[in-house]
Image 1 (tube, rainbow, N blue to C red):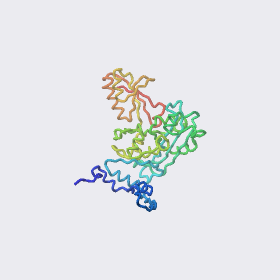
Image 2: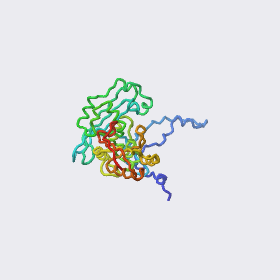
Image 3: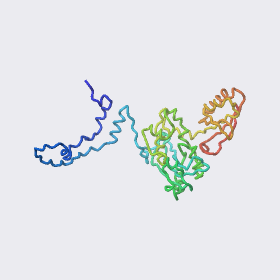
Image 4: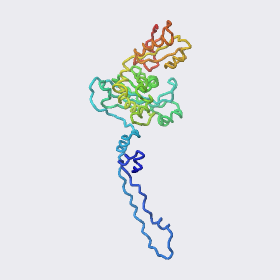
Length: 358
């Protein structure tokens, strides 16, 4: 027996969704007049029918979304709704975090300026790695004192007219900094120098980076970009405005890591508690440059050395072994180590420097 077409195509589930009556309207009197007339017969004009449009049943968007989600051939994206109050009570110690994002006139931290700063302050239950309680929000614009480049306007939608005469509310920012344990940004290496230049109080706080402090690909994510991480949670939002970026980041951090225990937020806070290292392969042989580059080292043109960043002590000692065997071929060598705690990470300031004999 031949199956109905919707079953053949795998769309049988659509029968369960609300439907609209899309039957074509009855032919009107104008259309009837268009038919050929019989000259010998006298016709009585047909009264125009009353236009009756049946009220379409209200479409339940969420019910439709759930039906699509139940089908293996569909993925559903929902618009991110900022959460301003997280449920539950703390089961363990509390850490207060400040989620931060900026929009700027460009990438050069020495010449460019902040045009938007957004902050979300919330407490985190260290036992669960989840936010708890109300979220305090600040979002402010600032006039950079020069035209915003067209490419920045295109990305952010922020225009010269939007920022004209605007200034960050420093008192409100100072209020939100009270009691903060860690500042979290998705690209702290970019945001921190801009913010510290404009608001020096941020230099006294510990920072963490949700982009660099989690190996997102090892967690099964296709990308570490914030929009991609949100999309993999089934969320979309208007990116490149500072406040919405902060809400998206908090939602991503509150989700459990696919390949790890606990939430991404718990992982980032743990990374902030531990030092990281910048390791420089001093006097590495020229012929080892391809090995170093493939390993993730970057060439520092100012210091003329290949350097890399390592997340913890275990990674540092594993790197010593690799350098000893693969780069220096067990010859005598000394490498430079810069130890970075959360007060120095992602800033332009140096950490504690030492040398290690391989």
